[in-house]
Image (tube, rainbow, N blue to C red; front, side, top):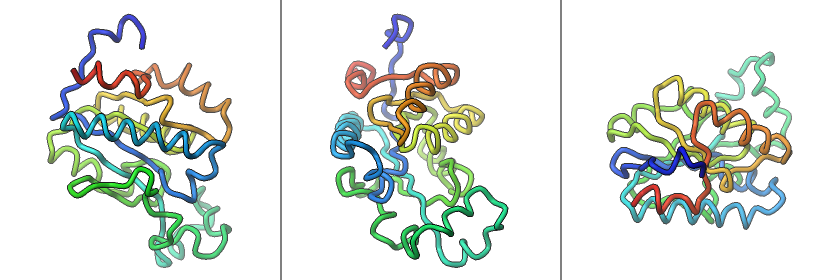
Length: 198
């Protein structure tokens, strides 16, 4: 955390941790999925203990949604994936058991890259009085980038957990964490959370 960030505090009652695309079919594409899941689990436990909201975003599709998707859509590439691998009920699209939700957590299913566009996530967060988001996601150049941009436009205060996020291409992760995200979010690590919540 930088010197300018040291005065920053998180109000747990107004803060949500969003764990995005932590599902077996995506998490297991990362070089060390167990280490990444352990970081996310630590963040979840810290935030939950402080009384913050925990939210999960996963990506999956029904047959009808896939059929209705235009072939020209960028997401249409999921149609070429092995049959059933991205089905809404497939094991690989569920929230990974290493970061499993608890009763009362927010869980949404999206059909595009960002967390907000095809879900009611914004409405659920606003209903709970949430104005600050702590983000962890796979991949950094996918859901995390899209959600930072959209969350910023929706006037959320944003924090990105650098060590609880990853990209299949590590250089993309480093470039986004180091150069792009700091324009719209505070980039922190899981170890910073306790002090921010104190």
